[in-house]
Amino acid sequence: MAEAYIVGAVRTATGRKKGRLSQLHPVDMGAIVIDELVDRTGIPTDKVDDVIFGVVSQIGSQAGNLGRNVAMSSKLDLQVPGTTVDRQCGSSLQAIQFGAQAVMSGTQDVIICGGVEAMSTVEIGSNIRDGLEHGRGTPKGERLELQYPGIQFSQFDGAELLAEKYDISRSELDSFGLLSHQRATQATENGYFKQEIVPLNIKLEDGSADVHEVDEGIRFNASLEGMQSLNTLREGGVITAGTASQISDGAAAIMVANEEAIRKYELPVRAKIHSLAVIGSDPVIMLEGPIPASGKALEKAGLTIDDIDLYEVNEAFGSVPLAWAKALHADQDKLNVNGGAQALGHPLGGTGAKLMTTLVHELERREARYGLIAICEGGGTANAMIIERMDSLSS
Image (cartoon, rainbow, N blue to C red):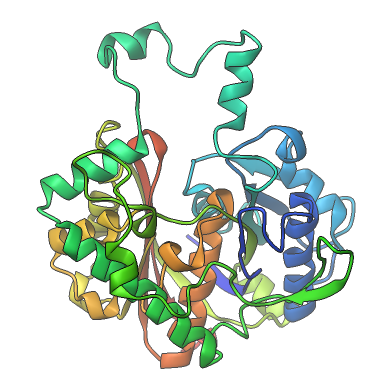
């Protein structure tokens, strides 16, 4: 079986809801990160076998096979196809997994995998609300209703249930939320994100031009007192807006290639994909899946949690990575070291590729070896991957 390597990884800086990226079309955002990958890797524009892009709310500007639209809007030749993936918040991590599997199978050589979400213009749940408003039904059919009678699957309920199951207090959550902003602030001020971010030329509401290159959601003056002052999202609960991920706009893309393509096109080697996993778990608690998914990825790689140098576990809510760390006895000093979605945002379909981009660059900056990424997803599924930093095929 062929090996799969990451040869390029880029992202946009995220934009806040109705913020600096709200006027940028999601297809254009996706095309911009693809163009940057092409420029950085030097891949011939007709030698990419496919574009696989994740997006969650496939309606409006994000409908009509966004992956193909992104490919056609980029520098890639028209012969390069494109397809779209929805595995909820893990959509672009699943895109990377599909790309890696295609390369490993030997059926394809070079794949661009990524994702995008313009949550300012296509609000979360837009496709479901549209179905309700126009009599098109709901995602829950009769068979699913029989299995889960009267239950409305909710990420907010899941976050609370997870905190309860793993005995995570409001105090722990507030401290972790603050740490996310503090780490993101430090990473930004020290320039850690500079290499991974593609500067975007944008127009502001007043019509003036600007360049967007800093994640907009970071609260550089965040305080514990501020976190503690926020009301919980559920009466009697522990989750607040400060310990939930931010609604965001953004895109990211990864290029995956095999050894033959790397040698033929002289592509830069960044990391080797060691193992990948996807699992289903209880859809009511919903957000626990990263725990067994990570265990499965570790087992496949023949590694332990202590062998991993850096962990990126999506901060959909603060309870997700905290429960993950408790369950796997993971060192929290290795967890989301440059902040997570509580500070940096969570552009749904783009988040998996965004986290992978940050993981690749941070492994390089630290000259560390192994990285693990895991994401919880609607419906109780979860993806996990383990990569190894490399700077050549022989390293």
